[in-house]
Structure formats: C-alpha cells, structure tokens
Image (cartoon, rainbow, N blue to C red):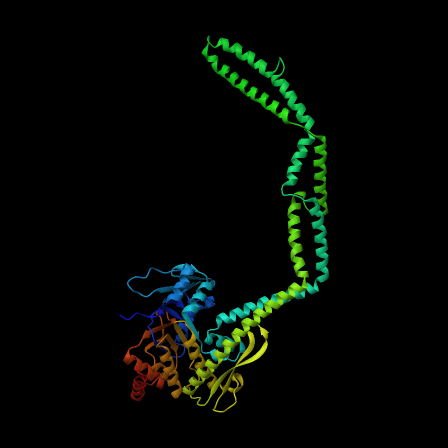
Length: 564
C-alpha cells in the first residue's frame, strides 16, 4: 500500500462566510478548484488561512449563525512532529503504519473572539501561525503587486535561497551594533552628568565604606543598647526577686515548704487533700528552678558603662549616615552594595574607549555576518535568475530574462545590499526594473514564474495558488497548468482557476457552486468531479452558459492532451 505523503487531508467548514456546511477530503498531487464567479472558490482558501491563524473579524460568521468553525487535518512529517512535541501538542499515538497527523480547529464568535485548538488542546494564534508556516503556503492572486516592492523582492530571494537563518543573524548583529553605537553617543552626550553621578557615588562609597555597616547590625546594636541602658534595673529586679523567692525567712520557698509539710502530715487522715499536697510539691520544684535561674543570671550579668557608651556611639553613627543618605539605618549595607554596582556600571559607560571598542567589535561581527549573507545571496540570485528566465520562455516570453541584481547599500538590518528584480522582455534587451518594464500581463506571468520557482524551494508540503493565472490565456495557460501539475509530483498543489487550460491539467477536480438553502440564504458547496463531470465543467469554462457538442469535444481533447 502506498504511504500518503505530507499534505492537507481534510477540511471542514461550518457557518463561515456563505458556507453553511462543507466537508472536503483532499488528495495528493495537483487539485484544481473551479466554479462560477462568486461561487465561493476563494472562500475555501480564506477558511484555510483563518484556521491557520489569519486575522479575522465577526463579519466572517455566516448571517444568522451563532459562530463559525473551521477544522483542517494534515498528514505531517518529522519537522512538524518535532514542533508538536516541543510545544507539547502531540496528537494520538500513531499505529499500524498510519501517517502521523495534526488537527487544527478554530472558532469565531459574534463578538469577534476566536479560539484555536491543536490536536484538541487550546493554542495561541501565534502557535497556530507558527505551525501553519510549516504546513501550507498561499500564493494569492495579487502577489504580483508585492513584487514591485524592494523589501518583498529581498525576502523572496532569501526564501528561494533558503537564507532565512543568515538573514536573521544579520538582523540580530545589526541590532547589537546599533545598541553599542547608541551607548557611545549617549555616553559622550551625558559625560558631564555621568561624571557628577560618579563623584557622588564615590563620596557615598567612601563614607559608608569607612562606616562598614553590616547586614543586621542595626537590629543587633539596638537590642544591646536597650539591654545595657536598663542594666541597673535588671540587676536590682533580679536580686529583689531572688530575695523574695528564696533567700529570706519569709521567702516564698520557705512559706510553701512549711505549708506543704503541714498538709503532708494530714494526708493520712483524708486522702482527698492529696491533690493540694501534690500541687504544692510541684510549686516547690518551680520555685527551686526560678532561684537557680536568677542565680545564674546574676552570676554572668555584667553591665559595662563603657560598652554602653560604645554601642550608643555606633548607633548614633549609623543613624547619622541614614539621615545623610536618606534611608533607614538598617538599609545602609544594601545602599553600599548598590552604590558600588552603580559606580562600576557608570565607570564603564564613562570609559569611551571601552565603549568604542565594544562598538567596533559589534560592527565587525555585523560585517562578517553580512558578508556571509552577501555571498550566499549572490549564489541564490544567479540561480533564481536562471530558473525564472527558463520559466519565462515557457510562458510566452521567449528571449526574456530576469536578473536579480544586488546593489551595494548602506548597512542595515537586511544586509549590505539592495535587491532588485530587473527584467528584459526580449532577447538582447537591457534589463530594467520590474515596475518600469512589465505590462500587466507580463507582470502576472513573471510573478507566476517566480511563484513556481519559490514554491519549489519552499519545504512546506501544501501549496495553494489562488487565481495567480489571471491575465493569461491560450498556450500560456496550458503551460501554467503543466508547470503546476509538475510541481504536484513532489507537493500537494491546490489551484483556484478560471482557465480551462489550467483546470484540464489537474489530477483531481473540485467544482464549487452556490445555491440557496431552504430558508432562502445563499451557501457554497464543493464536490469532486469524475471524468464526465469534468468534461461538463471544462466545457462550461470554455463556452459559458451554453454547452455545445463542440465545446464538450474540445473539453475532452484538453483533458486527454493534459493526461487527465
């Protein structure tokens, strides 16, 4: 059994735009989508872009519906499976040699709120878009207009050459270089202010460094000061308590002992008095322990007036420093550390030599990365020009050519050169900028040639062409169909087209039609066409509303000639 390759396998649409309910099973190879103008062909593409994270508003919900919902299932390869694993969005375990798949679903509510899911788990639109870039690429019918912008030409060259990593490295290196340059400029501008800040920090560090405040010192000094300041009262209180408890004839110990002895002699006459005797015995033990503790306290307590003066002097110094630097005395150690860190930072920013050296290093790294990108672009430009020129010959532009020119430019985040597409419409003609040379039809053909070449270099498994064949016809259209069919040998290709020559080249054919529901509202449906239905559809595309025997015969000939 042939294993299915990576591709879009199914699309399910509910209440989206004019589509009420649509379920499509897609196949590998080249599939064409046809139908009358306004039937909803491009809505299928819109639905795919919506489910893969395109911006959307509530207008996309079908009139009268509670919400819109689109689901798309893709057979996916190792790259997508690795992404799903890293994002913890894996699907069910793959068994019996079945292809791995990923299911993406997105809903849209009337308030404009949308929710996205990957393999049943909630996902952000950023995640959905990131996944979509690995699965599908859309070439729209107005893509040729963007070709006139230099930035689009540069991105396209990098895409064709597979230079995204090199371009990203250049952009990052440029940002680092610019930041280093700004630091130099700012340091030079703020030199006087920075010097003043440094002087203040140095004064603060010198002052606090002489004081040497320690973490927790303020709390310890305060506690010791309180104890020393009340030394006499503490000693007097301890001695008085000792006399009252145990060192006089009328002390608590003596009196409790006499009472306990008296009650002890009476216990034998009435056992009920025993609890009182036991309580007095416990009180004697507690009093003994108190006497012992007071004796120990008095034995080790020495209240030194000199030490008290020393502690109070230290507290005064800490308190004064806190007032000077506008912080609590307990915050002085942290202030000293932060001041040292600030001084180190400002000393570096004030050292213009260091900053200029850092800027020079960043510039050198940028230039090295940009040189690598420039060399790779030269190779990619030659290859792209050759391949697009070859495709132009097949698109009725014999002798025409495309040159991808690289012109030196000021250093920027995109490199050291400006990319410009130059085209010659005939053999020997001087290449000139695309926007100044190409007519509407020529631009469409060149755009299509570039799209096919770009798609060939794009690793995504599914490519969609939405009416990119506008403005062409005849043999050129047949060539376009053949090119897309050839591309379908290695990728899944879907193409929305109005041209019978292109439609005839499809390996599979979906016809989109608009009808009215029972409620009288328009809706779009799509169905796969068999051989006879394809003849009928292509005959319609050839002859319009009236399908004759001649147009049907012509349609059969086109299908046969295309190998369908």
